[in-house]
Length: 342
Image (cartoon, rainbow, N blue to C red; front, side, top):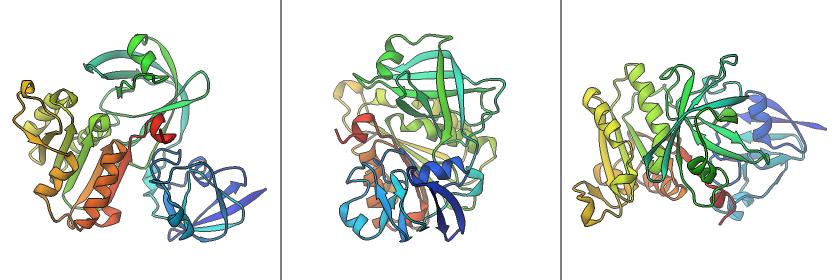
């Protein structure tokens, strides 16, 4: 049995089977709803149920609390409709919907950028036209059917039919242990994408703040490349945070970009730099460095990527500093431990 879900105020409708989540149906039908992890962990797909009834699958309280659910909010990534429904959701611009493809990808290079960061370059199939927006991600499909998601760190067209991924080693991780110990050139991996609603919105002239923690820099790098290719003139300030300077593994790349791009400013931040690091830059939490420089964010847009605690803290504090909620775009990098509440 199929049900109809209407998304307001855009007036879009989609058909959803009763055993299918609203988000899965929207992706399959090319209707661009906002989302991030697809696993009930990040809350990016949260919207309001105006009419109808849904059943939620497993999700985390920080993504949707009992109080929020009682107030009519739902997570489209784990909500299956039980009746026809009407949602109130901020839809993603139409250009956000690229076809989702399953494809083999070949490892071109796998190089360490830091002790725990691998830059993986992938060759895309020549017989499939894989299109994506800077900021989106793809998923590796592992042999047991499980998936691991990584943002593309290169803008479309920056490499000829190739993409880079930045992979942080998670000790004990099903994919990253293999990637850091055994993955080699010419290995074939199964992938699917693009996914995600994190990409540049082009209907604004507001100055932008790019906030990254750790490998959250990967999609931010792709955004910077896209802006450069498009001849951007909007001011952009990048705040990139890590515990120690080595965590800012492509800081030299940013310095080179800043030297040639008049609109780009860079503020590296380390939270736990040691004396032997010789760090003379900003210290503390990276999201707070933004507020130290910009206590009033009402005239800005923010693009935030990285650890969930950084993204969640930024969302909370920046809206209190005047940032309109619809000017905060985020991609929280939820690990498998995050998704399962570990």
